[in-house]
Image (tube, rainbow over all chains, first blue to last red; front, top):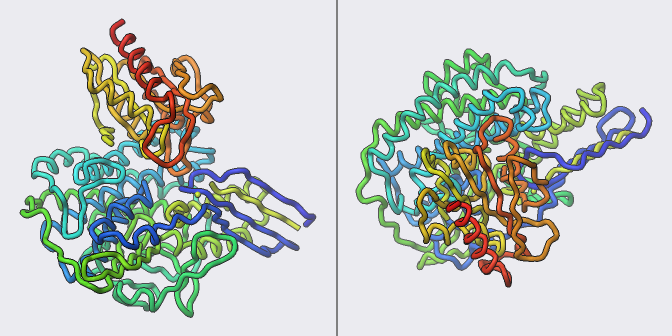
Length: 429
Length: 160
């Protein structure tokens, strides 16, 4: 094939700024680089010298879409460091908080970021002109999630109520009851979303991923569980650093995370779903069966169906938690600092989010480590692209570029979290 | 900052939505205008502060007849210049706004609202020309005065 170069100025519909470079030589993929040129943000350094109680609100600022995830991982790590445990309704409220974030984040991605790829639109605004009822449903679903976050956290973005030990303020029973009507609507809308997503035209594509997600004895994982993989890993969060390592690569200002001795792995909805299908509610399982993915899903393009199942589950779970809610008193347990190291790993919408903090006896943070899901998926995204381009060489140039962009968006990368714009360049020689 | 995105206000004549981020100097000028108007309640007029997130904006103005958005803009005019745009009559280039790659903002809210039939009957933007979006809470010279003048002009429209 003669030398050809394709340049796409901006890849939209990802959070943050990065670019993609693909080189094709003699009809084969010679190089793939997901380049992240957003400058590093130094959050781990900002945290040094701060009080342990500040970490949830400082780290929440890493992301406007998944601030609850940052708060939860920070809080669990601090409680681990200080030997505290939170149970009962406080624990349940944290789970409800997470349900809100999953619904909001997933609805945004499914309807506004990912769906245009399947239906052939440049963006959700173009899609809205032809499919207004679909986009309206997406916006209303997102709102249902945001309302949970605002109810518990005081506002939709960067909520302010969560603290080490529990909450600064907890909602009254009637406050949560006020969410039920919209959530019942959202559960029905989520069921329709699964059916709609399952019917979208989808490329045939599978990979033998090592999926990594939390696994809890009883629950579909959000805040708690052991870190498990589809290839036998089963560890506590405190052993994370023994099994995972971050590597610097020249083309990315976000570190690449790999499993020691094993390489790339996949986190996020696909990983959670494949490892935890048995923990879904009967309603979510039935929808997954109807969608044809009950036996598992290794096609990242089908992650839109898996995210839809997770929206359904989160609506179902939120309604269950609200029905059983009794306001906890006091709203937080006392957590006294002590010298030591704490580890927290929770399931952000995009996958496991690991925090580690070392504290002195007064609770001053001596050192911090934060590994967001997108850092962990970078290599997997590059591997997906390598295989995807190899299998799609017959596509015309614009089709190939669109397929590459879609393959990246399959993993809903949050480049801002990982360190932002994706510019795409394909070279054929 | 309050972000009462779900504050549907049926029956309200005019809603002023000040948009911005007051940790990024002049980007906070829309919020300053909203706070001035909140401090001087006027019959039929309510004011709110907002992050500008698109889906929440569409919710914020649901059921309201007249909406005035106030935000920092960049058009190349002098700092503090007040522009008034009738958003139902014309589209504003997205380059006028300080856009984030991280979230949907005002341009997307306007485009989505237009596509979905979710725009208020009257929708006006008071754009205040910004000088600086540097980190920090202080407005540049002349921006406080511009915020005061914008608030006064909005009150005049509400009384008209």
